[in-house]
Length: 377
Image (cartoon, rainbow, N blue to C red; front, side, top):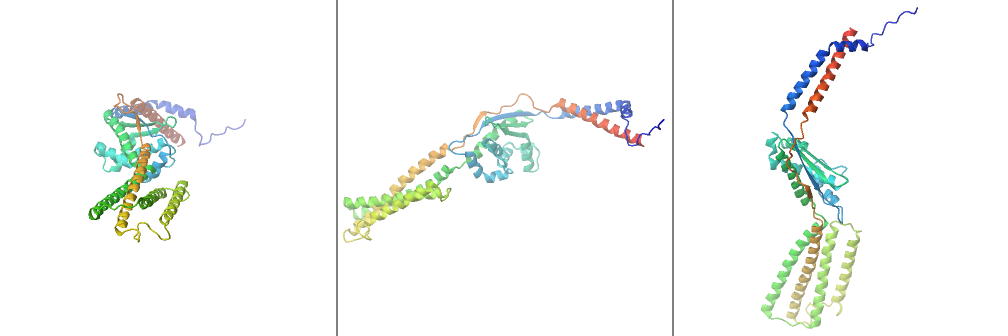
């Protein structure tokens, strides 16, 4: 007969291990019961949480990618929010804006959350608020779902609606599009043109009071008015070119077209001013034009120039205003947040079950380890 081999010392007899654990089943049950009882007490002491939800529809693309414009112009603000890598849609962009530091600070100040959260520093209040807010966008529908969880159902709804209001305010301030830039530039140019027009009118009035009205022949007047109109158109085109250069490259077809028009108008102006001979300027003094008439024609020319410039700039300004109104940020609220009727948490039954399961697992594991060490000794 072959001699029996003694079992190695590092092997574990599972039957004996299970038998030992079964003998200590009362201890395991007691530990599990204690943990479950503690979990019941703790869960009952936790405050009820209420979740309020609002749904909004961000502005849709029309005539251009507004999200790209906002993203380019809100770079500083997005940096405060930790950056927005991977933003692919307008919904994601507005979700990141809602989580920005600027919006969070406004909500903290609006509801005095420093005191409510008992936060010593503002960043702690922002972190607590950010933990209570969940914002996500539905890729298929484009709708943004924004939920706020709080111990007070009314405050949860108020904070959710306040997020939408602050998002509207901040996004409207950031969405300065190309049309908005043109509108502000033309507005400033119109102000200067209006001042120049007023001065020209006062000069004409003063000249007439001093010398009386001079009658200039129809041909000279037509030449002067034509020159003034050409110069005004050139000035307006130069303003338009300056606006285009502020955001377009030198290869932009609109910029090239405007520059070509400016060159053609200057050529026409030079031809008109030199029609009567080399170096002839109809508004300068000469033997054929009296001195007083020349001065009067100068003032008429300046007045016509300012009138034409003001008229052209006003048309450009109105067009820029229409474009800006068309590109305005419109965030539509589908569902306003209302105070919830039922609590959303805590899940007390789940807390107790998980606590009991963890206690059972840990107690069984610890006793098994103790039994194995005891057997080996």
